[in-house]
Length: 124
Image (tube, rainbow, N blue to C red):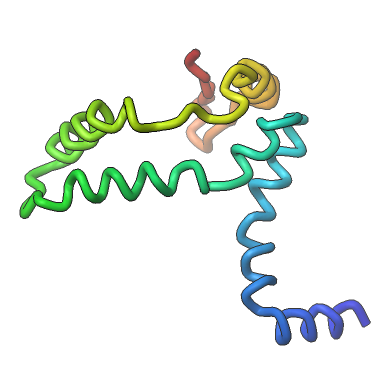
């Protein structure tokens, strides 16, 4: 019965179902980390990044040929400096330490098949 309902929902509301599926993992991650308030909203959406991406694109639109990865990084750094004064602060930016603490407590060493252990480090 549930499978039939799922098929009906996906058939009738395909776009909505796709959007829910798309954001499900990040929403669950935000809940798993136990983030609260504005931190719960900010990482769950890419909306704050859209204007930045647009500004990067307009800053670099006159480049006709990218020579290598370092060339791209230099242009992104240049665009970042140019855009820095135009950007708003992330809401909840004062509580980012809470996210850092939550991420550090959830990070565990992961064993790789070659018996090498990787440690993920979050730099402050």
